Length: 146
Ligand code: FES
Image (cartoon, rainbow, N blue to C red):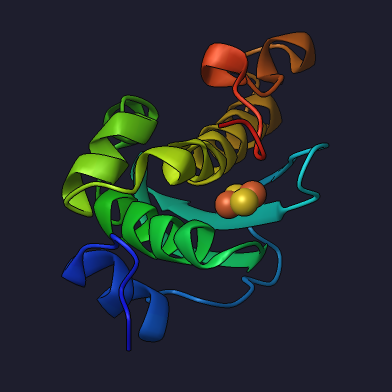
């Protein structure tokens, strides 16, 4: 199969994504969408001792978004919430050994949904206020930009 500039790791996570699914009654839930391409990402987390004990994702997104979400869930699992908040879209893309330039924006959804899920949990436990829990929209890039 032609790989069209995708790294082996991207293809591997796309073909065999980790942590796909839904967690019933999650401690934190994040959903982010992109108004341009319509792709949607959901992340569910369970928290134990301030760490991400379990994490699952569901996406209606492109192949890169699937690989990114799979990778971001692997990176976040077992980390403390503060550590997981520091995972950036670049970290995810780096772990995947890069994405083609026109697909770099797809790595936004995974990190953003993770951060929203963590903030959702922090709102529930009263650590932050609801208005502080908005998606950050790192760099404001949209799917469909070149
Ligand atoms: Fe929208 Fe990849 S996430 S095209």
